[in-house]
Image (cartoon, rainbow, N blue to C red):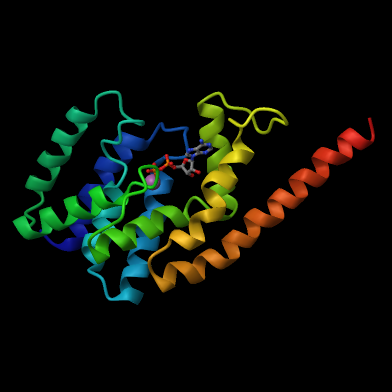
Length: 202
Ligand code: ADP
Ligand code: NI
């Protein structure tokens, strides 16, 4: 099986698992991360096939997204076995996937893990990053903003999103992040302006 066909099979698998997601981890998130991972890999001299495959699969089996992660992990093993990949490729993909988690703040050991983690983090900033944060919060029943509590979506910007540029590994991702970081800052300024405008004019 050629690399292109292997990636097509991976996409079908991912589409089936993430088609109905409403937490910002839908099929299109995987597609953007895969695209960014390939682009960053090419710039950074990483293995672009491993990066792209691991990027498509990076959220498979995440325990916050799946009620039965063990079953999904087994399905993933089955898929990787069917694709006529070498054992070395399978372990490289698995390693890069394990390296990724943004929430768990893992520190990737391999260049491919770094590339996929950077690609995933880039999708949490910029306009799409903002949209995903509110989608995630909505799905979890959290408020947009609150002046007294701190479990709101705006707080997540300070906890995680504004810190992303400092956490990126590759210079390619850092360059892409610059614009997206400015978008977050501009969004927050405008958000507070509108919020206060309403209060002042009450
Ligand atoms: P992972 O990439 O490992 O799935 P997360 O679940 O932390 O990591 O992040 C995935 C997406 O969900 C990101 O866009 C992130 O901003 C969003 N997200 C995660 N936690 C929160 C939260 N508490 N509030 C708002 N958005 C969140
Ligand atoms: Ni992700």
